[in-house]
Image (tube, rainbow, N blue to C red; front, side, top):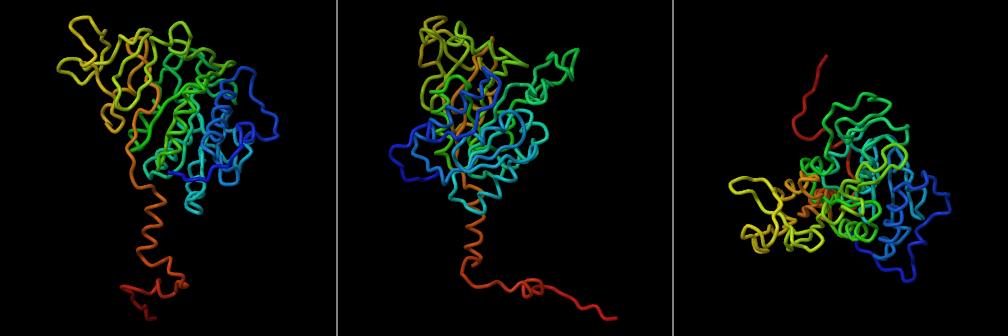
Amino acid sequence: MTVTTRVEGLKASDFASDQEVRWCPGCGDYAILKAVQKTLADVGAERHNTVFVSGIGCASRLPYYMSTYGFHTIHGRAPAFVTGIKLANPDLDVWMVTGDGDGLSIGGNHLLHILRRNVNVQILLFNNEIYGLTKGQYSPASRVGTRSPSTPMGSVEAPVSACALALGASGRFVARGIDTAVKDLSVVMKRAREHKGASFVEIYQNCIVYNDKVFADFTDRDVAIDRQIHVEHGKPLKFGKDGKRGLILKPGLLELEVATIGENGVSEDDLLVHDETNHAMASLLVSMSPPALPMALGVLYCDPATSYEDAVYGQIKESGGDSGTKPDFNAVLRQGHTWTIEG
């Protein structure tokens, strides 16, 4: 958990830099930026103690627009910079910003290891299922059949599920949000910041130029209420306009299906209850997709463990490395089994 002293009077606008925000008009990144600034104001974050780090891509412009410290690094390597920052100064509040191209392609290996190591940072992955900055090529998250300059006949590759990857990489906090749902997204970001360890948040973000309405099957107003399920720990997994639909396990199978309360003898007691500490449940929720099943949003998994930097500094302390005495490098080189070569 990042502990700060609340600075009274800071508003969301106080976290906006003096730089002109340069994304395409209508881009979902604008809404995400507002959600980030709102979150920092709400939790009383301190600008001098906050760092935003990004790789390459449209999402990676975000550090320029924050009145905090920040680094715009190289393609896919933001996790390496972030890990170094947290090891150098564990008290900093560090946020990593990436996209489905930057984070899941060239940066996939780095993303895997920052999650596996459980570095105490917030990772925001903007997913628009396309390479927007380089003019619309298909990305690792693009769906089968996606037509783009690099796949004119349609992509034949199975897409990467960002949250499934995070769970598979031993991520201890995995969540999802939607760019324009700023209020809900801010709640998820606050939970991510409270979590001690690597917090992974996938944000569905609409690219109005190269992949417009790719998420319309669950984000459009006329379908959203029946195609989204907002999960909450300890609460029944139900959704729909009247709250009468919910998730149950298929009899004898480890598969989810939608049931309607009041039909076929189903009551609310028969619905699954969300347990965010249950890895198997999180995996099932991550695998859902409309129209057969609703899109799961919110905190899907949260099971804290010792953070990477706490483990490293604990090891140093245990070894006496923080005693203040100057280490004798020559003695270290010659300790243990050695031998002498005679000519």
